[in-house]
Length: 296
Ligand code: GLU
Image (cartoon, rainbow, N blue to C red; front, side, top):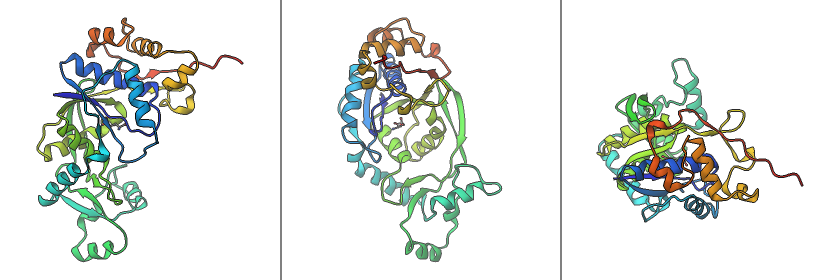
């Protein structure tokens, strides 16, 4: 079985993403798993980003088992999964606009971010009328409103499951569907990623069970934050390998900084892998204050 890293090629990876990738790689390799790479390029693609991301990961000493999976080439697999759910009567068309969803969620008894199932209750006539107005998204008719996952760092985590979108109204498979279909196809049984995605795990795990696969083991790891405690972003300064290299850092310097942030004594990828122990991982975000450019 395998672990994986699944970057979205929307720009360069920053030090927090690179640290998560190193963790995913250590979790996988230290447990005898394969390590797979998946480019999540169904949207938000920037030209050249994918090549740069893979080059940066490689420069840190991360290796992966080929082939790199490209979501843009996985359409038939997503279509097949959707067809299975449709055939089992587990889907419905949704015509809601973003605004309608936001309004419904903020109504009394609405749950923020939770789709209240408005279109699930449409009659066939109403549906036909709405189809003439705008293209439909396809939602899962969920049979549960919450689901429990196991996470190495968060223990037993129970979170809400709503009627999540499977296919967006522009016809593109939704992120939650693609992740679940791909992890199953890539024999991924260990998902290590940023803890901003912890809340997505219950819906993905539930969808996995509906598609007949066992949900993976999860480890949602702390993110990198800036000096103000806000999620690290490009605007914080030198946060990518290229930015740091421009200030005189090497890839090895960044690996050493990541090792230090994990409380590890080893300073290179091989040494970190040999010493890796999930029980010793920090549970709080990594505060990364980018080095300042030398005065001109
Ligand atoms: N592509 C997602 C991201 O870059 C990660 C998805 C996942 O790991 O499940 O945030």
